[in-house]
Length: 437
Image (cartoon, rainbow, N blue to C red; front, side, top):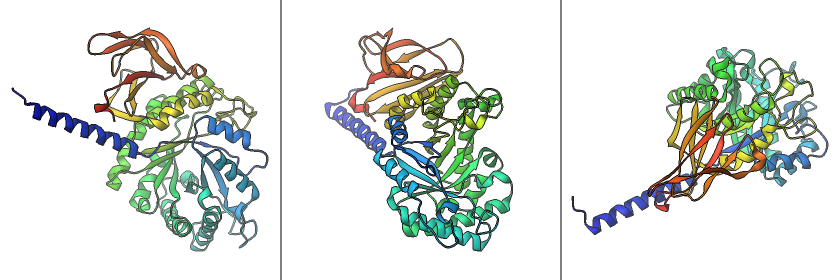
């Protein structure tokens, strides 16, 4: 069929417009949040070196507990502890956005109970109002309580009382700070499975807060659910279910995610912990409703190698980086700056090939859960020399020349790359600007 020059020009302009539209769409996407739990807000001492380690790893948010009992040490008399202001000041100096958990009981209102009755709920709301007024813009996120569902996640009265608490607390916080991001839930894995998060959506909690927070831990689940790949398959089902209840997308904030590097029950070795960290963060980027992930935890809480709770950290107790820290540091620029391309990604036969782009720059994040795998990699444009990549299992090398040559014809270049449990971040070059997102 004959096509006029004018028609071809219109087609080129149309494609150019579409490319620009995709480009603006990618720019409008909120940056993915890379967070970590710190357990440092209520401790004295210098924080500068620790906050620098956090920022150097590419982390953008720190999560900690803002205890009600600390704010109100005498009934009706509230104050902000000086160690809090030091923590928030150091966070600001390192461009870290704090997420504070508002919660836990106060001995002046019963025996440290959950605020399930109107008088205690009102007292709790007064505390949240005071904190949000005093701390102002130094806090980026508030999370209302932590794992409220833990004692009885199937109890409908428990979820109903929590919804009432959220309603009252949000009103007080918004009266002081309309810009802060407020999260509700902090729902445990068991609570997710037993419908606690579902009931929050049914109670219209989402109309009051900016997102639902989840703690989807799987480190003690069966083999199918224990890995990052089993974890994301479950979360995709969870996300679809919450969307169907809400009849709209549900912003999800995973405020506790991690695998412990302990010996024995439920643990993995430090090398596997690092591999699981990389894979879980990259897989988290494949689900658009996940807005951020906070690794649990920053620092090991003890030195017993067999104790689960003492070995979640990115750092040893003496702040010596574990492999997971080094891996997070090398992947964080990709997590923050690149846009996931679902239509060009593949997950099949134990191989995971995830495409990401930044403007016209293209990369492939590739790994396999099986040993001795090789995958074909196709570049976005004609390449010279060898494949350039980052091996997250050897993060200290940064981006390097793999020695694997590109094989090119007149249209495309390809290469055969060996992949293993650690994701490789493979440079695919730049595609023509017309098609850049």
